[in-house]
Length: 290
Image 1 (cartoon, one colour):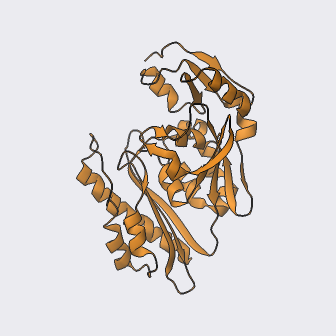
Image 2 (image 1 turned 120 degrees about the horizontal axis):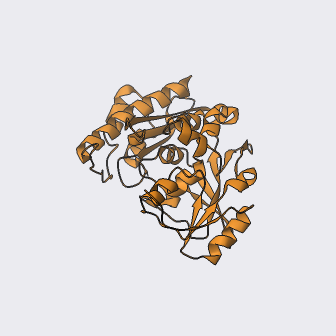
Image 3 (image 1 turned 135 degrees about the horizontal axis):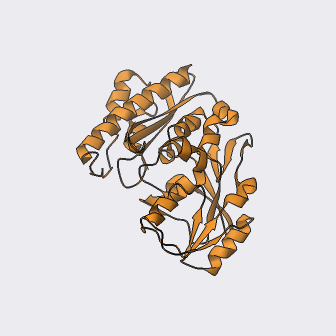
């Protein structure tokens, strides 16, 4: 449980951090809250030659605000800050609920939303909710700033489209108006609180009570979080009756290559996908009608 030798740097700005990563191509790793990277280093699953600590950039990267159409969250914002933020609770309470479900108090106080997304753990909580909310990530690198959807960013288990010298700086999430509701539910590992399966649902109703928008994100079931597009297509344009939700939710695992491990078989996870999607959709619709 002792990491391999490494160099350490704590730059004062994102620009300086990017420069450091450029100077050591293929060697550098970013550390934000440290809740994911440090355990991997102790097990020598990760052995970076350089650890770039972003703690001094919190003034630049830790914030929560709105610009009218979007909720904007700095990448170094902690889970605890998001869970308790009045701005998040007023605009996208499902994100605060998701943050409150992450691990334990220590992890929520230290872990960051940017670090979680960049780590791309297939059993993490945020990806399901961010997928259902059509969230985007703002990324800084030597060639400037680019913005990509979270769906585009996360490729597979622990693999993203981030270049070695790029850093996530902000998460941007559209704020929906009108009759909109969302929910995130998970069946958690009792020890780690990771999602064995988690499902997030966002719905919008038109004035006639029909679903104008449906988005469902699934985490924990496969090697990466994914949208349950079959469920979305089956419900969009329909009245969300209990029967309609149940019929659509039966497709929640369609297209997913569910994993097997000591916590459950693929068939077990497929069933959890269906059950949790049904419950999340039902709760989201109830909230939209409030």
